[in-house]
Image (cartoon, rainbow, N blue to C red; front, side, top):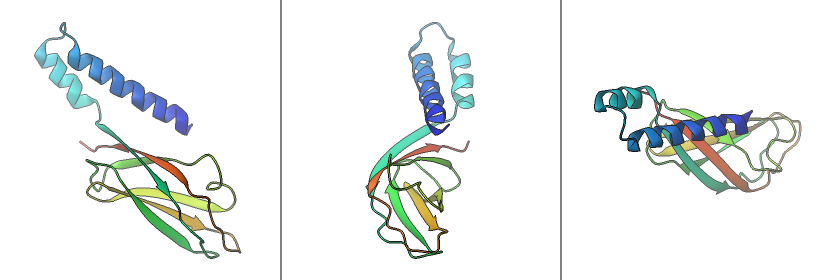
Length: 126
């Protein structure tokens, strides 16, 4: 579902770019369309959370330029080692240009998720 969402967002961005370069749409219609389409930001970072104790959490940050607190965030996880087991993964824009990603370990033992590339999609609030 996450890949489907990313594909749809990228499709909207491509459609928005094609509209901006089209010569056949009157300026007023173009501006109205641009106001209706959300601005979408992308970022990625390699993150290593290290060891997380039982029933504890760990938070790391990544840069997504243009992100503001209150914007919506979707996170793409690395292919291995993060989503396995009893873990909750939460993401939010914690400061200007900063996305925080938190992993909560719900298991009875410590975990050490693999380092990996996390991808963030931020949808700007209008």
